[in-house]
Amino acid sequence: MLAPLQNPWTIRGTAVVISRPTLSWERIGYKVNEGPAVIQRNGKLFLTYSASATDYNYCMGLLTASTSADLMNPASWVKTQNPIFVSNADTKQYGPGHNSFTVSEDGKSDLMVYHDRSYRDIKGDPLNDPNRRTMVQKLYWKADGTPDFGIPVPDGVTPVRLRSQAAARMYLQYFSGASPTTATPALAETQFRLVVPGLAGGNSTSIESTLKPGMFLRRANNQLRFEAKGSQGSFASEASFIQVAGLADANGVSFEVYGQKGSYLSLGTSSTSSLGVVQADVAQKGLATFFLD
Image 1 (cartoon, one colour):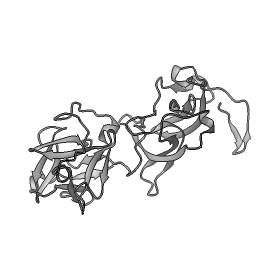
Image 2 (tube, rainbow, N blue to C red; image 1 turned 120 degrees about the vertical axis):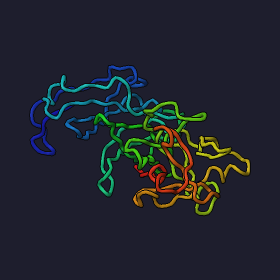
Image 3 (cartoon, rainbow, N blue to C red; image 1 turned 90 degrees about the vertical axis):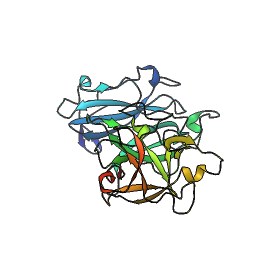
Image 4 (cartoon, one colour; image 1 turned 45 degrees about the horizontal axis):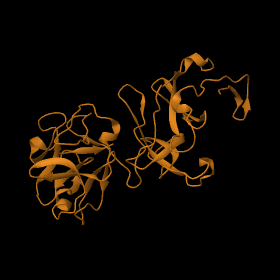
């Protein structure tokens, strides 16, 4: 429901319905549209809401309207036909929803606050289960000006994106196999946890996928790829780096290959998606420098 206000605590006029739970994913267990929150950006109002029962089916939907539209006209609001934030078994986050928006302490990032659980199955009525907890993560924005909610990130270290200093929209991305398969990766494919100390201990850093927790960037046999943490003696050192100030810009970071002084992780050596290792010469410093987004 939406209604104009006379003041922050008094409704003025008649409320109108702008959304009903008509889609299949809004009606699992219960028919629910609840918990609205709004963020304004790029001439649009983005209204999130939560749907379905408050178990692992709980999820978030999105309504969008122009800031210049008649907001009291239900036709001004366009509903996204699929949920925009859902449970994720890989990250062990279930039933995310009932969110709100705020900003980071430095004012540079939009944040989304929501609740979820760390397990899927619930005994009894999920409303009586006491274990929902509050989560906070960064809200990103797509090139077209719409919000990118990504996935509910795993517990632990806050993930970041590693943006190349050499190209404004080039990011390190998770991939299986020998190389990335897409030039336009999903947000979650470009989010990583910088684990400190790294697997090698000491002052090392390991780069762990947010999309696939437990998968670490490893350099072995002159190849860089993401692999599950192994028990072999060499894995810890091969999946570790030394994080230093950015070679091309001290506001960024660079990652020296563990045990190979002067060799650095690079992005874009031969294409927009290639990973490699370069030496710290002037021509290569930009490729080996990343900004944390």
